Image 1: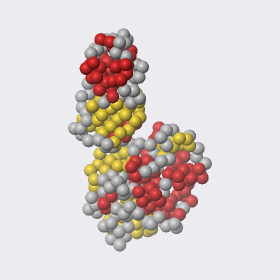
Image 2 (image 1 turned 90 degrees about the vertical axis):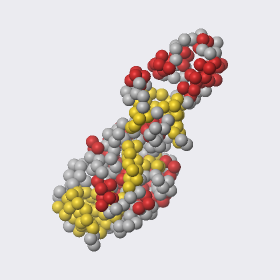
Image 3 (image 1 turned 120 degrees about the vertical axis):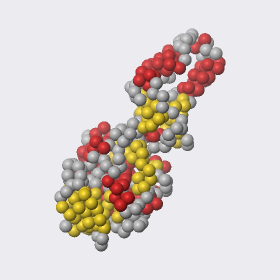
Image 4 (image 1 turned 45 degrees about the vertical axis):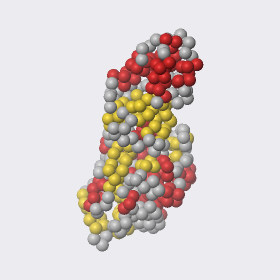
Amino acid sequence: MKFDAIIIGAGAAGLFCAMEAGRRGRKVLVLEHNAQVGRKIIISGGGRCNFTNREVRAENFVSKNPHFCKSALARYTSQDFIELVKKHRIEFYEKKLGQLFCRESSRQIVEMLLAECRQSGVEIRTSCAVKSVSKNDSFEIETSQGNFAAESLVVATGGLSFPKVGATDFGYRIARQFDLKIVETNPALVPLVAANSASSFKKLAGVSLDASVSFGKQSFRENILFTHRGLSGPAILQISNYWQKNKTVSIDLSPSADVSELLENNCENRQNLDNFLSRILPNRFAEIFTAEQFSNKPVNQFAKTEREQIASKLNDWQIEFSGTEGYDKAEVTLGGISTDELSSQTMETKRVKNLYFIGEVMDVTGWLGGYNFQWAWSSGFAAGQVV
């Protein structure tokens, strides 16, 4: 069967591209190896789908070429997607930092995309595994449901994160087949494993606190969460996009208080250190941190140098991580098809005519907070206008 465009992958980017191409009267086929479409959309945001962010800028993305995403983001904005959500009468709310979530269920976003695809005549085949791709005059696709051909091929197969919902390296295999450059991939937006996973991490597992986490020039202030093996929580997930092995991360465990000043102003205080610190830190953390790092005695018994050590440990904790919790726990994949290979206007490869890559499979990775979905919509829109 012959189509104008075949899209491999019925996730956020693939479905969005399909509906846009269909609106232009193109005959579009979407192939999905899972039994259902949009599986990553469904599980995202705790089942509520953080579908975009009110404030989207190029600085919210990590790529070898930080300017690549600007064109697509400008042409299809978060406000454009919000208007589509409103058109389908999906109720949503802002959680924090501009993050928008469905009030009811992430399935509403999938239903919206499917409704738009139906309206524009898109054919979708699920449980359809692609066996091979070849290019002569057109693209020939051999699948478990027969052979198909199309003038344009769009690869929207995502990254390696969440293998349990069917993530594979298929997109990278297609890129290699056509000799396209790939930026090394790594788990991103992922919990980090402490280099010295001492007993203190196990004891602190479950404790969450407001912190400012920094690596290089990047800094994020949100919650961190202690795990049995290291640290998680929004601020850690954010910094994982920038973290490099064998380099320390700086964590301010008390960003609202200068601990040095606090201790200096209360140097005559007779409270035990853990009780004193629980003014600014969770009780359990203050208790375990004090027992592990210092002797728990009254504040007035600490020498000035000891007070400075305590303050340094709390306002500038230097920690080394040995690695991440891997793709199973990663929300997205860092790296992917090099943007050097692609047009920033259309997402078409420069060397292979009518071959496009969109969404997470590319070397464009967003921060936590709806940015990766916005990249799916914007890159899908860019390709959908031309395929």
